[in-house]
Amino acid sequence: MRSSGLSRFMARLGLRGGRYGSPLPALAACFFLNALLTAQIPSHRMEWSALLRVSPEALAILLGMCLLIRAGTRFRPPVYVALTAAVVFLRLFQSADRLVPMIFNRAFNLFMDTQRLPDLVFLFWQTRPAGWVLMGAAGLILGTAGLAWSVWWAFKTLHQALSNGYASHPAIRLPTAAAAAAIVWSLTAGLPPQFLAAPAIPRVIEEMHFILNLDDVRSRHLTAIRQATERTRDTAGDLQRLQRASVFLIVVESYGLSAFSDPRHADAVLPAVRAAEAELRSAGFEMCSAFLTSPTFGGGSWLSHATLASGMSIDSQIGHDLLLASDLMPLAEYFNRAGYHTVRAMPGTLWPWPQGAFYRYEQTILAPDFGYRGTAFGFSPMPDQYVLDWIARRVIRDRSGPLFVEAILTGSHAAFDTQAPYLADWERIGDGAVFSGLPPVVFPVEWSDLSQASAAYGAAVVHVVAVLKEFIRRFLDGPELAIIVGDHQPAVELIGENQPWSAPVHVISRNPDVIAEFARRGYTPGLTPGQPLPHPGMETLFWDVIEGLSTPHLNDADRNAWNPPN
Image (cartoon, rainbow, N blue to C red; front, top):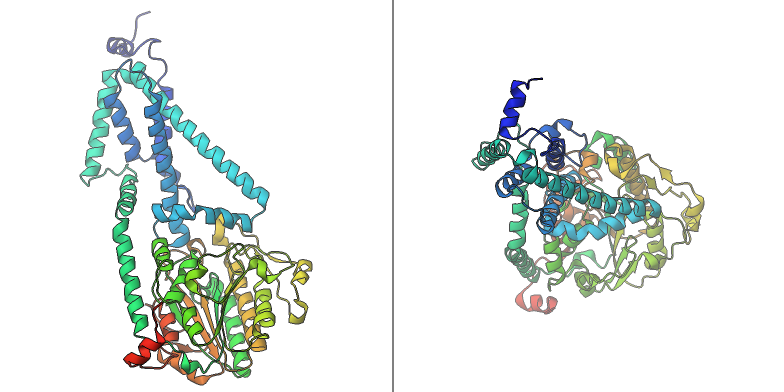
């Protein structure tokens, strides 16, 4: 039988016969590497068409292999170990670069966010069964190992094809290299073809640039710390306008503007807030509220805590660490010097807190110190109601002078799926064992899909509003001042993209002069804030307290007496 024209042509090119084997493995390897670097993972909705786009990074790898590999070249494992590690890193980087904006409404930062991985593991350990977490960790390790092996296989297959297979022939190698070079050139020239996926390397270079310029970043933060320190030395900060009334600063987890502005949450939250306002007013309290711009979004509560304590916006881990090493006088120290007993209640902290050296509270109460004997609910080791009742029984009732208490409530922490019930009879709370016999409030919500958590989030906020209202009504029986502030908005997946970073703050007291001072600073009457955007930063609350509630002016002698060297 005579050969066809195509067969004769392939024979002349040397592409026919068993010497080269099948081209399918090499094509599969190319498709795998390309799909790996173009897949939009994680994603709310997977766009499979993205897999058909061409990855600039995969194309660059193919170009380099076409140019460097010659017929008969031996496969060198050390070279491909480095290439495999680079591709796996790039895939993990791309995933993190998509995941972080979905939760925190900001870009992924390689240097700072990777340092928080232990916190992420701990979060899942607290909110999910230990068996699930261990299986998830094992799956992640095995998945990464499988990914690395697959990339290794793809590189080895391509190398064999380029050195001994179909792709080793110049008729295929040279056009492939030329096409890849043309596409890479068009990308660098700013004229990418429509079929090309967005490159990831520019983002990696951006993060590398950040790491290489950390000294400049630190310098900017140190300058801001020095400016804040100078401002505190020009502030009286004697808190005399409080007339030694106790102050309670209560920070509520994930309590953001969306609780008031998003109908999915506001339909439940606003009636609860209005009912709490009416009941507190009938008990003789006055109140005003505002929105403040948090330095963080969806998480990173410690940045908000540092901002509230320092009077400067702490929006990164670098700024946080530099602040803790500085001699800036924190909020608690003003109360210490004014003769207050200062207490920080941290029910979500399970082990020693070395950062307390900066915050300077006289007494720090961590989770084990509460003596809670009940069950945990979601992220929170104990209900917010138990925490506030414990403060009332163990701190307020035993006071012999004015108190400054900061309490950090964790009951409204994501994923909002398991919440503590409300116990109407506070006298039954005791050591918390009663909560073990009460059914939790459960919602069908998972970490993997917080977009379905609207009802759960609204219920969590309604619960904490009820608890706070009752705490104030029951236990603040004089001119005390209560300041309730949210630390940040909930996750982007829950409330949507491009939302403000604002959180509410409420100021409640029977002292009308104190409320009038906050109203003079832009707060609106009641418990529903009414400020239009843009909102001032959360750091302004620090200055509203130490400037607004202190002697207006000091002469040099008084300033030196009040602000001695730290």
